[in-house]
Length: 113
Length: 114
Image (cartoon, rainbow over all chains, first blue to last red; front, side, top):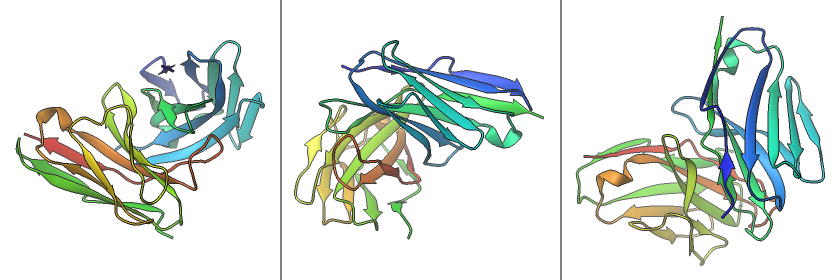
């Protein structure tokens, strides 16, 4: 069974610092990995989807990397803002899983002014 | 386009009561999914429907039933609610099953079973 882990469970940074969020997975047969943002009491908003053939994917202040061999993905958020406060989830799609997502438990981020 | 909609947004049940969570999508997607989210555990797949007329168990199906009413709608039923089913339930849809297909999520239903 594939497992996806996010450590730490919670993180607090001062405004302006770069955020580094970690996601690890046990199965190297990963097809792609997706990062989501979840605001309190709300649904999931997709941030970035990175294919196993890519090493990086960028959107604005967000950059995601994927290293299949080490089983890790990292989401970088540059120059954090209080509006970045949310829970960030990663989810992997693995080969032979027919596209079903395997989620990590998430990292709750607080950016303090 | 409303995307994926879910009703109700909140619900409180007593142990043993039944209820149905409704989900609808307007993106003409073939595949739909039900997840539950518990603190510290991420989202876990309860049931999915690859296409109209088919349903399959996910990771945590016990205590639930589903119905794919038509292409747009996929409902989740709790026949006899238990406190362990207190959770946030998310519905999602994708164009079809498979690794290339992004899932789109609804806003969730927050269920408390007393």
